[in-house]
Amino acid sequence: MGDRVAIFDTTLRDGEQAPGFSMTIQEKLEVAQMLSGLNVDVIEAGFPISSPGDLAAVRAISTEVHGPVIAALSRAVRADIDAAWEAVAGAERPRIHTFIATSEVHMRSKLRKTPDQVVEDVREAVRYAKRYTPDVEFSAEDASRSDPDFLVRVFTEAVASGATVINIPDTVGYAVPDQYAALVRKIIAEVPGIERVTVSVHCHDDLGLATANSLAAVASGARQVECTINGIGERAGNASLEEVVMALRLRRDVFGVDVDIQTAGLYPASRLVSSVTGAPVPPNKAIVGANAFAHEAGIHQHGVMVNPLTYEIVQPEAVGVPGTRLVLGKHSGRHAFARTLEEHGVHLSSEELERAFAAFKALADRQKTITIDDLLALARGVPQPTAPRGG
Image 1: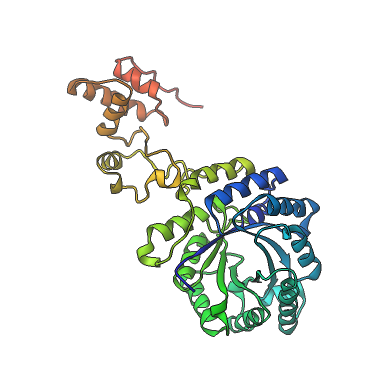
Image 2: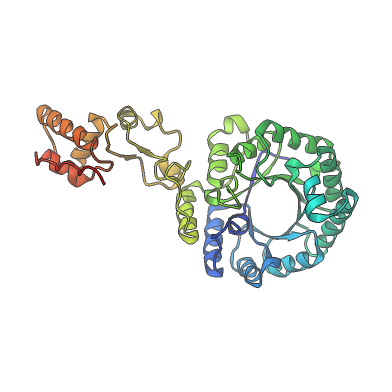
C-alpha cells in the first residue's frame, strides 16, 4: 500500500460533463499538457463512447501527452470498452476505466438488473478490458449508497478478474466523512487480494464534503484520489485537486503520505481551466480564489505584514500566486494604509497620516472599492466626492 497517494485528474471527463463546460479538442489538449506539467499520476481524458469528438480528443491526448497514465472511461459494456481502447491505445501508459452501478436504486431503476447479474457484468467487463491492457480500473458507481456487503462481493470479483485499481465513488455526494472512512476500511479489510491493487476514491460535492470525504478515505487507506481542477464536475462538482493536494502536503503530520504534484502550477492551472470553461473561480475558493491570499481587516493586515504565518498557512508562491495582497477598505488599519502609500512613493508625517487615514475611512464607508488613485488623492489632500445616493 505504501505512503504515496496518486492523483487521478478527471477535469477532462467528469469536469467537462458539467453543463456548459464542454471543451474543443485543442482546449482539452492544452489542459492535458498543463496537467502533465503538474505531474498528475493519471489523466482521465474522456468518455470515448459518448461522441466521436470525445473519442478523437482522447486519442489526441493519448498520442501527444507524455508522462501520466491516460485513462478512458467505459461502462461495463463491450462496445464501450472497445471504444475506450481505440482511444487510448496510442498512450505510453494506457488505462481502461470501466464501471457499473451497485446501489439498489440504480440496479432496480436504471439497470433493471439483479445483483447477481451485476456481479457477472463486473467479471465480464474487467476480463474483457484486460485483453487490451494490463491496467484496468473498476468503479462501483454509487458505492456510498450501496450495501457494504454487496460492495465487498463486487470488488472481490473485480480483483479476482484482474482489476489493478478499484474505485469507491461517492457518486451523488451522499457520504459523510466518518461513514465513508468506515466503508473504505471495510473494503480494505474484507476484499481478498486487496493488497495487490490500488484503492481509489471519487467524491462529489453535493453536501460540500467532497474534499473532506476524500481526505477521510486517505486516512483510512485509500491511495488514489480522483479530483478536478477548481472542483468542477457534474452538479455541485468534484473534490478539488488543489484542496486535496495542499491538505495532504501541508498536513503530512496527520496523513503521513506524499503527493508528487508540482504545486507552483496550481494557480496557473486554475486560471487556464477557468478560461477554457468560461466558469469564474469564486473569490473565496480555497487555495486559488482571488481572496485566498488577500487581506482587508486591519488586524490581519498588520499580522501578515509582520509575519505572513500569522494568517497564511500556505505560502502564496507555493501554489503559483505572485504574493499576498493587501486590500484597502473600511476594515483596513493604519499599517496597511501607510505601507501602500509608501510603496507608491508617498511618505507622510504622523499628523498628515492621521488626517489622510481619517479621510480614507470616511471614503471607505461610502464606496466598496478604493483605488490607488483615490489613495493618492487623499494623500495630496484633494477632497473626495460624496457617493451619489439612491438608484
